[in-house]
Length: 139
Image (tube, rainbow, N blue to C red; front, side, top):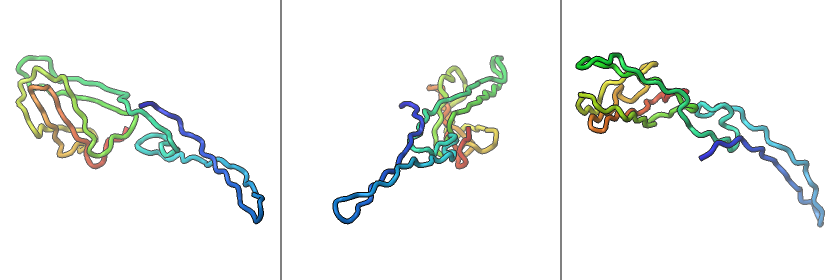
């Protein structure tokens, strides 16, 4: 998987004429679309390819104190939009006392960016699975 700039597409034609002759038509380049697709500028240009990456990641906690309720806050940003039903998994959150929860409450800003407002928490694995909601996540 590698990024690729859009290509130039050319139209060429040779008109058949009666007899053994043909009449060439001047070649022309198509004008590529500059429309945004999936949050990518000029993403509609032919064969433009981007490799999705995380371009901003931050994680913080509300307290380092033992036996205290702790709120983990993450900030993430991608170079492409995340579409509905995209899956995000946070791993390495080991050492908590929070039991498994198939619908652990999750909030987002703006609100309701994840399906059901919940994630799937697995204590043994230290993972939280999230599914992007109907509106997707714009980068």
